[in-house]
Image (tube, rainbow, N blue to C red; front, side, top):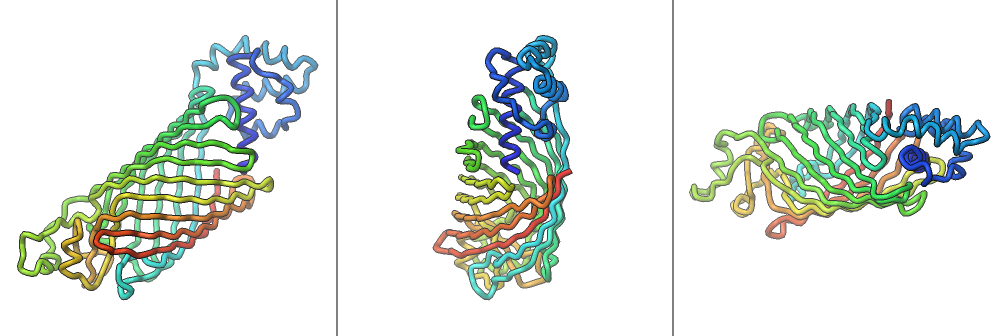
Length: 361
């Protein structure tokens, strides 16, 4: 739970500081911390031994000074790490999977997804950590198999803690890459995402996070599409490219979380994206063709559907709840609402309701 990790963060801060600067830490602040809490914290075994010794002897400060004198030179230059794995099973319903502007083209679908992540967290020193991970996921769309997706990728996350204690702010940098495979070639894409974030714990219960994210998506070159060329209406100069997943987008985001003592976590999230939207229609018009950045026959459907990319600003609001079902697992529920403001007054909404089960190994 967040309360557990809050306490672990505090224990880590005091113990790591004790090793590097013994005189700067009061051992009284560590008294009363249960031994099992240290087992949950991502700290080396020598710190656990140090903590246990300090708690059971009559001279805890002497224990810290003795162990610190023997190990501070080693610990100050050696990083330690933890491996982790996570399995997520989710079911969701999306109200407008085609992102269509007209009601006739709006289609809703149930989506089932399984995702597995494996990685390693490396604690570089007291204030800096690095996380490397890889993932693979598969998504199944009920009644619309053309949207079924296989995705794999990897990520790197660096976090710097600016200060001492659990209330010190954290600065983060994340870099990730993913490749998605769908039916046909039009929707296959490679996505690179880079983000900077600022995180601050306001209290033991409240946590704030905000930042900026930039995405670059690239798709393979596609052959000329005779169905799309027919939309030019005898004006070849109006021809648009077919790579609908070639785009860049920038997002501003903010999240506020509240953690209860029983481990329940509530969250509210807002994201504003300046980028594009990929939509699908059965009724293409010359006007729609002209305002699009790219147009191609949508490979997610058999015939008669066209996918197009238009510039758009998207506002997304999300509410979520995480309910612990055990020490290493939880059930997560979320609702997201998207308001898309496309070019030439092409506006529409979309919403997603999702339930997932997450287990950490």
